[in-house]
Image (cartoon, rainbow, N blue to C red; front, side):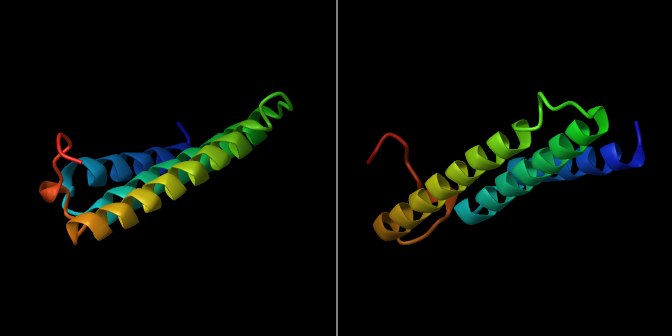
Length: 98
């Protein structure tokens, strides 16, 4: 495994560790998810360039579009929960109650 692949694997792993261990605020969870998606996007783009395959050239753009949709849905949930609960702490949310 080259240095570039190791760096993006480490970036994804750090985002995953941040998502699992530091779950106090919804905004921090969303930032960790965005970091993971960014490392996946850059890794997929570099992989496509290294293979020199035109079949996979749209895959990074598709991943970027899905990550933008995920970010907009996450921010909409953040605004909705901040308005209803008064904060974005994940411990105050109850999934059984609307």
